[in-house]
Image 1 (cartoon, one colour):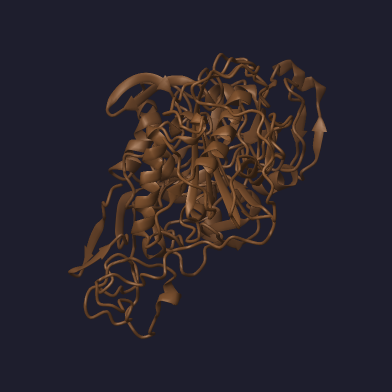
Image 2 (cartoon, rainbow, N blue to C red; image 1 turned 90 degrees about the vertical axis):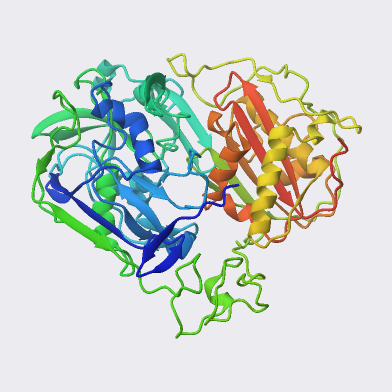
Length: 631
């Protein structure tokens, strides 16, 4: 794991991991009448992320929607985020989204080093996220999702909140529903002339929605991308949900004004992006990404807590939207107009140089380890707060960053990165049901897959497939090969333990029975093409219930008082490092990884060819007394 650190120098004082000052000088623009910056994507990983999909569009090598925008609309800003070093993280806004670097010490080459936030979820719910589990509640955004900014017919983000819990359409159904500004949904059979069907159903924890065929085809599309400076034809996205996240509403038609003219537009919003489909647009531009980054920036500026870095240059003069599509057409995005140059700079309060890894204010007031909630960082003399009790140069060694398991009920959440974490206090189960089916990694499953998602009309996703498990571990003398860790699983265990030790936590050991339970679930998800912490009905032979608690008990795991689970699925997770980086950066999965009470883990990776996920992971975390795999 990389030990890379960033240091910015201010007045001769090094502030490790703290983004101290950014100065952006750029040409100003008008977007929908709002004065914002037009700045280049920040050099390094942010620019590389932008360049992959939008570089070819900017250069004229590809004709399709911008996924970020022709330029950034701010310089690099600091925004409060509790778990980032110094309580702030670097972000840069684009028309279509926001790029974030939450863990600057992570490996920059990881696909999850730069993330784009769940901005649509925040706009729809009104919950501004200020940390993994820190939120501040405001009103949902009343900005139009699509069309001219002064339009009065289409939905706002607040409107979408009224539609989140509507059930999914039937598989392969025509999309005939309209959503109106007030949240009323009506059926218009005349929309059948567009011939738009739903193509793919997503069923994960807390989400059950169909995806319209034009959007699903786009999410799986190939095109010209920039791969390290070389233009190649490849999938636009590492997996279909990488840029968008999961859908939070069904697809709906709406009529919105575009440059004052009413246009029928299909809208569907996902956790990270909103997509629109305008049949009358020029070829290649029928599907577009909405201006979520621009909308979020304006909403955040209206509600931003006083401790936040100000967002400079925002005014509010409504203006009719036009197009950001080269060559014209009738999309639902906006044109930019030159205004005067704008400069912005941000600074942090004074930081005590005794603590180079975090921005901790000097005394007074006097702080102790309980006030900062983290440990294991460096201390230099004179240590005015007294964090280094034993004088070894390391602060608050008994105070790692930890997360609390809640209650006796499962607390579950989902992520656009295809992963789900579950935290549950253990029941009083002591019996171990008899196992009647023990999958091994050397066999090829013979079940016919029953996917929970409607097949797409494109070749990139199919209704049925013959799964083939390709991971082959060393056989366990006990006879259950699923209890053995393969090289990739071993690599994840090594990364996990290295990270836990860095955090001042105990390393964990692999449990044979937890690993059996983990691999069984990964393989079952691959065989039947789903992604969920709950096992799909009908349950496999020998499984007593659908939860991870049932699965670990069925595997014979004993002596535990609690158990938690992370899962993930997708081609992007082919390596242990990719999975580790994604979970470490996630408010959902990270707490399970750094739980100070866990002593054992079970790691199961199944590579199932022919499904929608390819690589499926399950990791069980617990505190039982099982022995290691005898491999």
